[in-house]
Length: 173
Image (cartoon, rainbow, N blue to C red; front, side):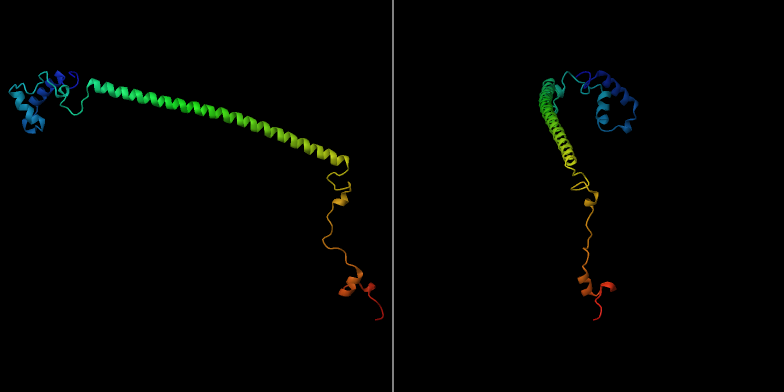
């Protein structure tokens, strides 16, 4: 308290400051204190009675209240630390579960791919064994060609349409 609120050197400095300052420029508290210092009034100096110590100040920054606030902060910090530790443990557990699940899915996928590759290889071998390769049903490359989009017309149909070649038209009629 004596080091901060009522440091004796602050009172000495205030006295020197007010003596050096022009009295017409005093403001607020300076107008009240300067005449008291000139009269050597004891009302300017603390007399082992401070309002902060006596409890007359609204912000009672006393040791018990400061210690109480420090304890509150410590308890809150402890609770936050526990909550964070619990969250970290939950995240670690979830990470382990996800890692195991990922490994399981990778293994299942790998196994399924191996089975699909084996089945494809077996199908290729079987088609080669029966001669039904990529060419078509009997190994003939021509068999895999697509059919003509329009079937050939018979001569009778051509005649009735009037488009039959001249050699096939009936003579004498």
